[in-house]
Image (cartoon, rainbow over all chains, first blue to last red; front, side, top):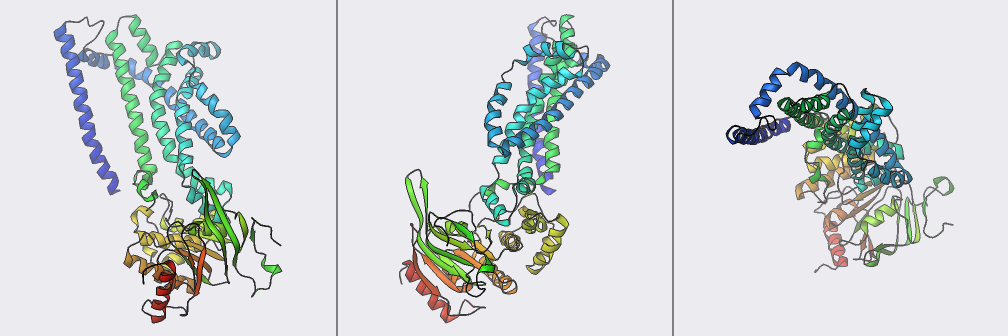
Length: 266
Length: 259
């Protein structure tokens, strides 16, 4: 518990640093637009974005809920599918060697170009978005989960064997728990891709969501509103990233402790 | 007859109880193929442990001591010779406690590994934590415990695996002198209460003469048996016993230490 408090203290300091950098960047941007006399239709000033955020809050909020649903459900599916696949790959060398190339290949699918086809197949609803979000967030979770399985100390595996543990017991009692921090790491990376994936999928065909609002706003030269959606999307991604870290800290407090040191040979 | 290169668990029913050693190695050689060619870890090593006997294996670093333990535990097979052993369990040099589990759950891990429910594993491990003075730390995670405490939990964990043979791999090597002496004391006590056949690998000669009934001295790589010395003192032994001091000197001389 005490450890958690110390870490929050450290986080607060780094939060301040991040905030100061943001203020400095926004200030420079504001000065550039106001003093440089650029066209605010092309580049809105931060204060105009703030005004858009406030004035269009109900529109932005209702569309944010649509995008958030796509992201959260998509990542949830990706986590479940990635855990299942990583487990199958961990247990079977044949599965691993046959699936890995396909898995990498799946990441080269140009999703922005693919999304309209998915819309054609599945319509304007939730399904094509979930597929896109799942596809872009799935890979990192599989890779970090596999790395988690592989990080189990081989000496511990030997020890479990002399205890008489079955393969399944070893998995349940040791390997699965050992891989959980890896799952969390993968999920943290995944949410960033997932937000981007949801927006791209909406752009391909949707009648709601922040990606849809963005596209419409650009078309209507409501540039400040378009930037406002970007601000919300960024904030959402950061929130998810930090939130997953917080859940890990609470659910797996041991993974935050310096377990590396005690695993090294003394 | 046992074929060369095989590890066989001795079948107690087919052998007379007295005569059957719990562990028997006959002319065992073990090689590894490394990046720089073939390395012989153990060469032509023979030894036998009677039931309930404690044998220490001492030798310089890299004499194949850990290989010896893995052979006895059935984790490796000899390239030549035969290994016969009752079911054996390892106590590793590093404690390898699960960082997420409490002391009590870690102590019961071997029972969980054998498929017992968690509650039952905890129920059986609890008296042992009590016995080794860890009752109040039952719910503590490994990160909150000292090295000596962790090693005690590691020992209980291996003991509760319920195997006849304990293969201890330098159990106190990473501890400071005082904690190590404490460790040797509780180990001797625990084994007096719960006798096992013990193969204790150590590079601490004092530990060997204090705990073991017999001492096998191995040479540097490739590990060959230099001598096997019986301990004239009987359990429980004391460090200051003149017989032990003499034995310690003999072991050191066999190892090539300056007199």
